[in-house]
Image (tube, rainbow, N blue to C red):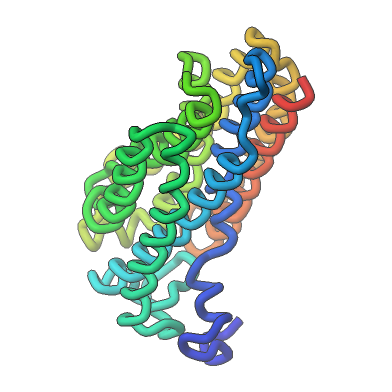
Length: 303
C-alpha cells in the first residue's frame, strides 16, 4: 500500500495508526490469566468467575495497546527518530503524513481516557488496588516511549506489562488471590512477548546506536541478542512445565508447537541478520506469540 493511496486523517489512516496486528499480542497474557482463573474458579463456591470482568480486562488491554501505539507514533515523530529515509520497520502514521500531528495528540488523550473509563468498573471486582494498577499502566505507557526505551529498560517493561500484570491482575480480579505458580506463568508469558521487542530492536540496532537509543540489543551486542531471543522462548516453555505439576498437562505439552516455530524464526533472523527483510521475522514472531497464547489457553481449558 502506497502512502499516496491513503487519505490524510481518513478511517483507513486511523486503522493503520492503531496497528491492529498488535492487538492479538496484547490479548495473549490476558487470555492466559483468565483461563487459569476460570479453571481455578471451580474450586470456589458460587462460581465467582465474572464474564463481564473478563471482557473488561480484554477491552482494557486492547485500548491500552492502541494508546501505546499512538503515543509511540506521536513522540517518535516529535523526537525526529521516525525518519522515513532511514526507517527499517513498518511505516508510521505521523511520519508518513497519514495522520496530522495535532490530531494524533488528541487521539492519545482520547484513548487514554477511554482506557481509564473501561478500567474503572474493574474496581468493583478487584478493589481500589485497581486504581494503582491503572495509573501504573498509563504512566509507564508514556515513559516507555519518551524515556525508558532509550536506556535499555524496554525489555523489563515488556515482561512486567505484557506478562506479570496482564496475567496476574485478571486472575486476581476474578478470584481475589494470586500464587507463586501464577506469577511464574506470567513471567513465562512476558518472556515470550519480549521476543518481539528483541527482534524489533535487533533490526534497528545500527540506527538506534546512531541516534543514541541504548536498547538492550545495543548494549549486549548482536551475538548475545540472538542467543537471548532463542533462550527466551525455550526458557518460557521450560518454565511452562510447571503447568503439568498443577494439573494442566496439555498446557505444558501444546506449546511445543510454538517452540518449533520459534526456533525456525531464530534461524531465519540469524541468516538474514540485517535490513528490512527482518520485518518478515517480526511478523513471524508476532504469529508465534499468538500461537503460544492459544496453545497455553486451550491447554489450560482442556486439561
